Every structure is written in C-alpha cells, then in structure tokens.
Amino acid sequence: MMEKAIIMAGCAIGAGLALIAGIGPGIGEGNAVAKALEAIGRQPECKGDVTSTMLLGCAIAETTGIYGFVTGLLLIFVAPGWFIGML
Image (tube, rainbow, N blue to C red; front, side, top):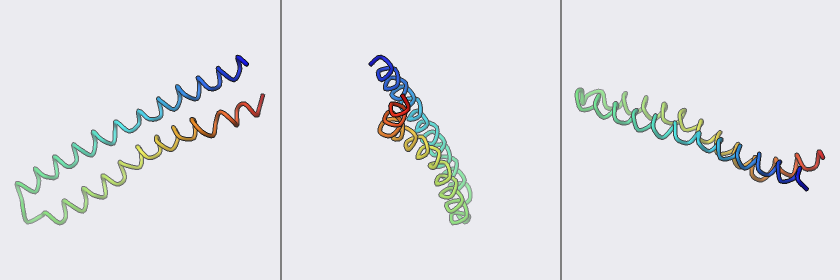
C-alpha cells in the first residue's frame, strides 16, 4: 500500500515539474514578438521577412511547452499504472 502512495506522489511531483516547462516558451515568445515589433517599427519594408521568421521561431519554441505538457499527462495518467504493474 505504501509503495503505491510513493509511486503516485512521485508521478504527481514529476508531472508538476514537467508542466513548469510551459513558462520558458511563453517568455521566449513574448520577447521574440517584442523584438519583431521593434524591428518592423524601425524598418517597415522588412515586415514580411521579420514576421515569417518570428512565426517560425515561435512555432519551434512552442514545441518545448508541448513536450512538457505531454510528459506531464503521461506522468499523471500512464506512468502510475505502469509502475504499479511492475510491483
């Protein structure tokens, strides 16, 4: 019984830590958009190039948050059953 409680607690703590990964992409994407707007404000003729590059960078940065989210979901719903089955 105590083993199951330890497994559940470990998975819950791991899921919480994995979901912290969503903070980084939010900050990074906000900085990228801010710098892109500054660049467009200084040189409006390069709007298309700056916008497309910014969107590509934001999409790549967002994958980090998605990986953390998926890891958290796996730790909440899949891992406890898998680890308990190993007992």
